[in-house]
Length: 107
Image (cartoon, rainbow, N blue to C red; front, top):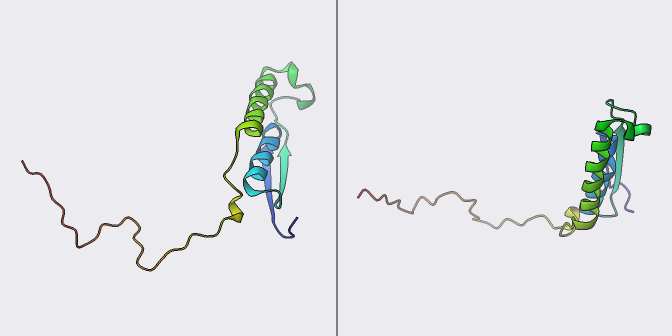
């Protein structure tokens, strides 16, 4: 692992933390250290999540979302591995050229 390449994310609900870490790790690559600090959901006791409808709903939804991220999310390549885009002299950024005439159909 390259020293100095890390990302810290704080204050996520505990169930979202694992999927968030997975997505960032897949996107940024294995040479970036991802740190997540999760806070418990105040709506229910996470140790007994199955006793609360909100807990069951959260676990089922996040479980499906995690499996989807694990099995079907494939970023093209790590973002930091790409070279920054090169801008050539005289590049146009979508602005209209002053030499072009604009025609309107008045008929």
